[in-house]
Image 1 (tube, helix red, strand yellow):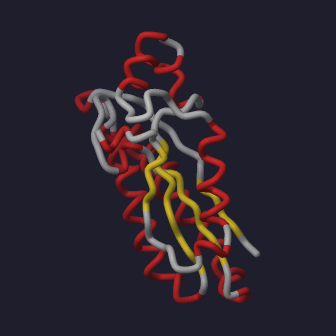
Image 2 (spheres, rainbow, N blue to C red):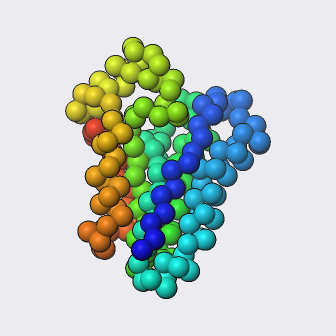
Image 3 (cartoon, rainbow, N blue to C red):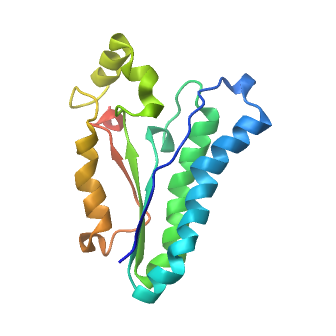
Length: 167
């Protein structure tokens, strides 16, 4: 059984006018190219097993824009499309490919949100449940996407955001 989770990412939070070719390429490469090429290394094994799971990590910015997030948003929107394309290419071989799109969780990428109590509270207030994510909130969906319960679910992006995208 092979399960690939593509969770590495970078968000430089640059205003559009300050994005350089180098910072654009770095963001697109790590957030979009690496998940494809890394996953591709496992496809022959998964095909031979007739079973595989690919779990890509997107973002709220997979489907909406935020200030200073042009390159990051483009890359995470690309992750959702990459997931659909992976599903089309590989799911007939038993390889289900899906994306988890987290809302605001305390991670290195969201340190600027969680280091400021006012910003943290404002973001929590934008969710339907009234709080930001806890890392354990990602466990259930990750186990689900990795399991046989997901045998007929592929090419999907599921927002784990406390209802942020519902408001």
